[in-house]
Image 1 (cartoon, rainbow, N blue to C red):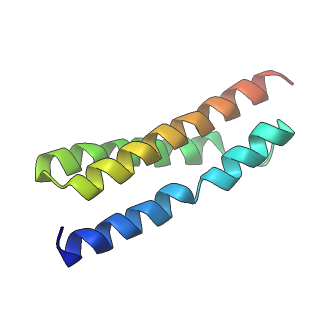
Image 2 (image 1 turned 90 degrees about the vertical axis):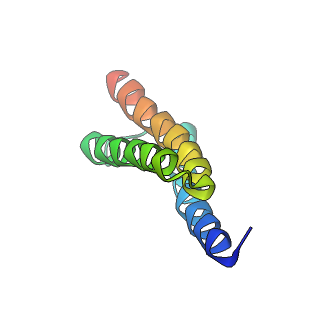
Length: 87
């Protein structure tokens, strides 16, 4: 793996991990009042496009990190919808 891929992988890991504290907080508190469904939906759609882009470019760091990020953001979207409905 060359330096460019290492940098890309590191950047992707940082972005991917950034949503985990929010997921854990929502999971524990079950509160989503202050979280925008629209924002997370657009973000999730954008990440899905990054996954497609990664496949088109055959770029493994983009594919791996954005696939994980897509999964995590889908969890967040689910939590927002589920806990908002519980009100």
